Image: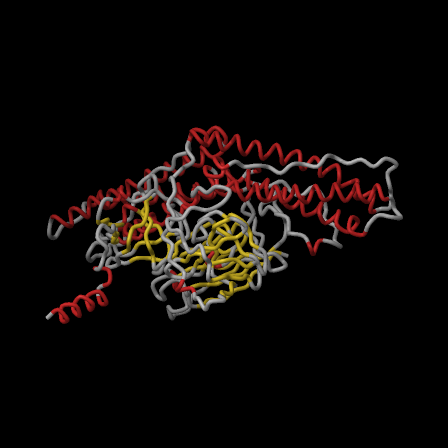
Amino acid sequence: MFKRALIAVLLIGIIFPALIQAQGTITVTPNRDYINVRLWPAIGATVIGSMGPADTATATGRSVDGEWVRIDYLGREGWVGRLVVNVSGDVNTLPLADPRTIPYNSNAAPSAGGGSPAGALKGRLEYSGAALRAGPSTAYPILQNLPRYAEFPVTGRVASNDWIQVTWEGLVGWLFLDNITLFSDSGATINDVPVVPPASDTGARLTDANARDKFLVVDQIRRTLDQARATLDVIEPAWQSLRAGIWPQVCSAPPLMERFFLNSTDRNAFPDLIEAVLRLNQGLNDLNNAVQWYLDACLAGPNNATGQAIAGGPPAIQSARAAFDEVLFRITGSYTVQLQGIHAHLNFAQDQFERIEAIWLDVRLGVTGEPPCVNLPQQPPDYALTAWEQQHYPQLIPLVNRMNEGLAVLRQSIAVWQTQCNGFTRTPGYVMPVEAGTNGYNLMLQAREIFNDVRSNYLVPAYGDPGYLVPAMTSTPDPTIQAILHAPYTPTFTATPTPGFQYSVSGMVIRSELHPACQWFGIAGQVRNGDGSPRPATLVHVFGPGLDRYILSGSDPRYGPAGFEVAVRADAAQLNTWTARIEDGFGNPLSPDQSIRFADGCEMNVAMLTFDHH
C-alpha cells in the first residue's frame, strides 16, 4: 500500500510539477492569455520569454514600487508585471530587488548563497574577453572586463547552467557560459557546483532626493574629466613636435593625475557610474603613460630616445582620447536614458492603441460576432518627470505633456469599449448605441493624431537635440596606429543633415527562432561599423500601413550588441509592404529604403536586416 502511494505521489510530481511546491513558496500565474517575461522590471525592457495562462513560476523578489515580481524562469531570473499575474501568498514578504540598482562594495557582489569556496571546478576564457557582472543576467552592471585566457575558480551557477559565479582578483561576479572552457583536476563537472539563489538588494531608486546626490557625483567626475582633457590638449601637441623631430630646449610636461575614487556609498547608490569611472581611470592611466614617456624621450634627446617611449606615446594619447570621449557619453547619459524611457513608454502605449484601434475599426466597418472583451488593452498611466529632471531637462517637458495628452485620450477610448463589454456581458443580445461607437472611434482617431505628432514633432527632434549628442573628437587619429586603438565613440546624429547615404542594407525573410511562426511577424537585425563591429544608438525607422516606429540599435541584444526588433501586426503583415531605413535626428534617410514583403506561407515571419556604415 505504501509503495503504491509513493508511486502515485511520484507520478503526480512528474506529470504536474507545478503542483509540487515547498511549503511557504510564493508562486505567480498569468491572469490573461500570454504575458511577457522581461530582463529587468520596466516596460520596454528586453523580453526573454512568455508565460501562458496554465504556467506557474516561483516568485523570488519584488520591485520597490510593488509593480513587478521577479520569478524563476526556467532557471533564469525574469520579471513580470504585478497587474498581469495572480500571486499565491503575500508578495510583501519577498525581498526587494532590482538588477539595475544592486549594491556591492569594492570586494564582492552580494548573493543569497555562499557558492563553493573551494572552487574545485575552474574556467578559462578561450577566444575573447568577457564582462564580469554583479548578477546572473545582462541586466546587472559590469564589475570588470576579464582578459582573454583568464582563469578563475567557479563557485556557483544558476539552475539552467547559463551563468556561472566566479572569483577574479578579489571580485565575486557572474559570467555568461560562452567561450568558457571548464576543467577540473578532480574530475568535477558543472553539476557539482552549487546552484546559487538570486541576489537581493535594497531596492534603491533614483528619486528627487538622491538625484541631486548623483548630480554632485557626476559633477566631480566631469571636473576630473575636464582636467584630464586639458592635460591631454597640452601633451598631444608636444608629442606631435617630438615626432616631427623638433626637440624643445627645456623639457617640461603637465603633472601626472591621480585615479578617481568612487566610494562604496556611491557605488551602491549609482552602479551605472562604475563603468564610467573604470573607463576614466583607464584613460588616466594612458594619459599618465603618455606624459611619462614624453619626458623620458625629451630628456634623452633625439639620439638616445628609447624606442618604447617613441612608440608608446602617440597610441597612449589616442587611447586616452577614446576613453575620455566614452566617459563623457556615459555621464551625460542621464538625458539619453530618460529619453529612451519616454520612448519605451510611448511604445507600450502604441501597443495598447493598436489593439483598441483594431476593435474600433471593426465596429466602424460593421464587423459582427462575439466582441473581443477578453484580454482588453491596458490603460497606460501618465509619464511623470521628477522635479530634478524637469529642472535639468526642461526640453523634455513639452514632449511628456503632449504624450500624456494622447495617453488621456487613449484611456478614454479604451474605457468606452470597456463599458460596452460590460453591456455585452450583462445583457443577452445587447446592441451598442450608435453614439458610443462614434465616440469610441473618434477618440481612437484623436489618439492616433496625437501619438503621430509626438513621434514626428517631439520625439525625433529630441533625439537630435545637442544635449543628446556626444561632442565630436577634437583630434584626428594617426592612420599608422589607428588599427590598434579602441574605436572612439562616434555620435549617430549630427547637428546638420548629412547628404547622401552613409549606410548600405541587406537582408532576407527567415523563420524566427525567438517567436512562434504564424503568430508573430517582425523586422529585426543589427547595425554595424565598416569593420563589422556593432554600432549602437543608431536610429532605425520602420514604417508601413498603420505602423510608424523609431527604435535605437542596441535596444534588443538578442540580435547582437547593436540589435533591434520591431513587431508587425500579424493580421496585416502579409497584406502590406513595409519599409526600414536608417535616419538622422531630422528625418533625413542615411540608408536606402529596404522594402519588405512576407511570403504567403506564414512560417517565414521575420525580416533580418543588416545595416553597414561606410
